[in-house]
Length: 281
Length: 261
Image 1 (cartoon, each protein chain N blue to C red):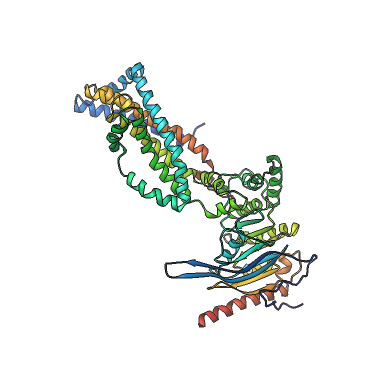
Image 2 (cartoon, each protein chain N blue to C red):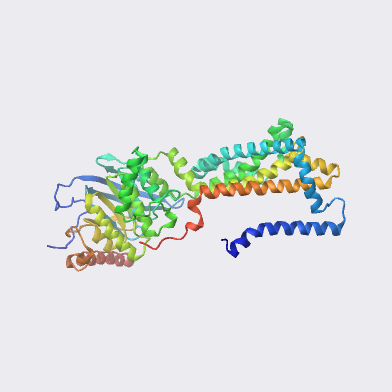
């Protein structure tokens, strides 16, 4: 077993799991340019190509300002790329849709709705009968560990609890892909760890495809099958690293696993190198 | 059992009113001016006004115009403000117009409106409408502008169309701000109601007040001031009750997050 990362941004991940993986999301030569002032353009993303396989947990890892969130928003259909295209199951992404469910760092809950009201919102919008939507939503609220808080308003909840509600709200309309935008970035270290553990447990149940944006190396390695390393200005894919660690993963075991440690150290070293290179220039 | 602090809080507004009346009484007795009746004389005149059928018809006519002007203003201003807050082109079109109209005292437009539409109900209702519209538009606009983008994205991912997002996300999210505008609008409705009747004297509460002033019935003048003031307090209290109920979720008592990750 080797921890040497696969150095290719185009290559499809070698199939190590049970079923043959098929591409669910394809990002095809996507660039994103923002006009910051009348004469200056900021290249947020430059020529990004990436394939995400169905059922994979893929993290996009990079320093702030590398365009990793923008890439997620393009897949979500919230932002249109300047050039290139993103496809979901072969169909060009032209806007948001319930097949891709976002979870934001800012939670973005509906503050006028209770926990239950927030979770039921998606299913009700899809036309699920209210009794049925309520039963499903209550089960989801229990799954994310918030049983007993159904009638609380978001304002009454802590950050960790809000993010649990946001996750349940998105899972409630059964998206095929979860788009998580630094979901634990606003939480304290302890809460963050608990939510990472719980997210993995929930994910193990149906292994939905997850695209997870983060700037934490540990978080990316702990959660993912594949880590996409990005560098900034312009935002490019630097490396795509397959994380070949057994599942289901337990933090207590993984932190002691030399393979896990090597992934973390290798990735951190690569970021350090690029920082120094950037400094030398 | 009410605590002493709660009791004091309840009693405070009553004490303030009594204090004001007492100061008025003393000042009036000290000044001995014909045009400044004592508080007791003014209060004594209130039942005469409220017992007079003619006066009641006048006051009700005022209230009807106020309700119509306020209602129409809210119905038109909220959607307009929300659209302005979410669409740059709508805002770019209406903003300059509103900025010109905002500082102009609406009563100052009244002589012109009277020339066009006469001195009847339509003119007065229109003036009330204008007075209420601007704060409601402004607050709806600010409220809609402040709605978190990610909240709208979350709705879009659930399949809400842009129109649905405006009604089902922007409207409730901006509601606390909208209601702040409506509250200002309600007070302005009362003010413009009286001023409109001062300019186009024909009927209404303002008409009673200014007729009494012309005839030197100063106790009636001050009694009307008390009645209008009391109406203001009543409307504001009722509105505040409704508002607090509608936006319970945004009230500060919910600002105590539970300690559980």
